[in-house]
Structures are given as C-alpha cells and as structure tokens.
Amino acid sequence: MIRLRYSIALTLGVLGLGTVAFASSPELPTEAQARAAQACRDQGVRAPSPAWELCLSHATRAYEWGEEGLAKQLAHAAGDARENCLEQGLSPNSAGYRACLGREVDARSQLLILGDDQSGVNVAEQHDKQQ
Image (cartoon, rainbow, N blue to C red; front, side, top):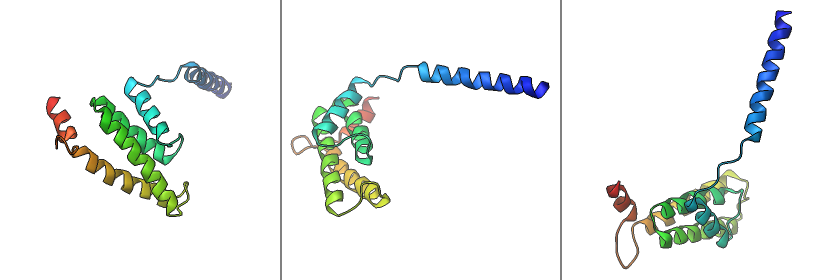
C-alpha cells in the first residue's frame, strides 16, 4: 500500500512539473539577440546548425557592445566560414565540419575584433575597460 501511494505521488509530481515546464513561455530574445539572428540570416546562416550557433553568439556579443558594424562583419565571417567548409566537401553533420567552422570563425573574428583599418581600437579590450 505504501509503494502504491509513493508511486501515485511521484507520478503526480512529475506530471505537475511537466505541465508547468510545458506551459511556461519561452524566454524572449533580447534586442541584441534578435538583431544578431537577422544579421546571421542575412548571410545565409540558418538555424539549427553549428554555423548558426557560432554566428549568433559572436554577433550578439558585438551588438551588446554597441558595435553594429562588427556584428555584421562577424555574421558575414560566419557565412563565409560555412561556405568554405562546405566547399571543402565536409558533411554539415560531421565533427570535421564543426571543427572547420570553429577554426574559420575564430580566425576571422580575431582579425575583426582587433579593430578596423580606421581606428585600430580593440573593441573587446575597450568594452572590458568600461565595465
């Protein structure tokens, strides 16, 4: 009898938690995330994909820093990286493709974050100093 009560209580608890989790609305994206998502889509990067995650994370951070030009350049870099890795014949679902994307986006983002030709300012360091 005790096992039956325990099983019923456990089942009701799990169902209750599942209902609450299912009924709760998903978190709305921030303005920076929404703008980054649009920039990534503009460069041909679509969700869900490894390129999407990289593009979204890099571009969102740039928008959070107030660097709209950098965000668009990072989204463009993610789109280029996607194309380059596909042109190498890598399957989009392979570990090699994800590694290629990571290398390409990291290399391009390091160059972009160092600053543009006009200012030479490292926006990552500038942002960290402001905080």
